[in-house]
Image 1 (cartoon, one colour):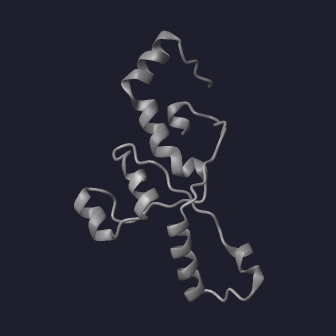
Image 2: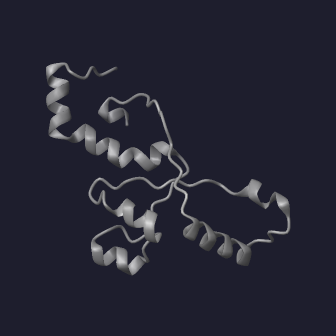
Image 3: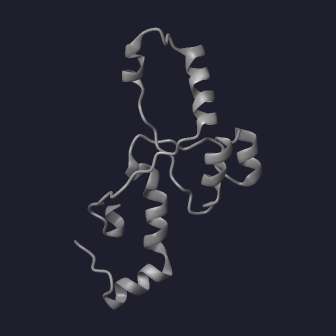
Length: 119
């Protein structure tokens, strides 16, 4: 992000979506893969984040309602075949941030002094 003049980001909020259907589906899959009788199995889980693709912003709504699409369906729609999950919020949101910083509106605002860049 240094190439865009971004040196730090202040995160104000992270939203966790509660979808009982997808949660139950996940729990069933976990039970088939992991020994859930051991209470410490949850400590070894790692949170992964999924960010909005600036080229397909409506795709996040599909993910929330239906879950992630299969590889072949993603390819047919012109999306990346794999599901990009990362373990940092910056990684999940970097595509959207870069898209905003490259936009004509942002370039116009920075050139007029509305947005001050820190170097």
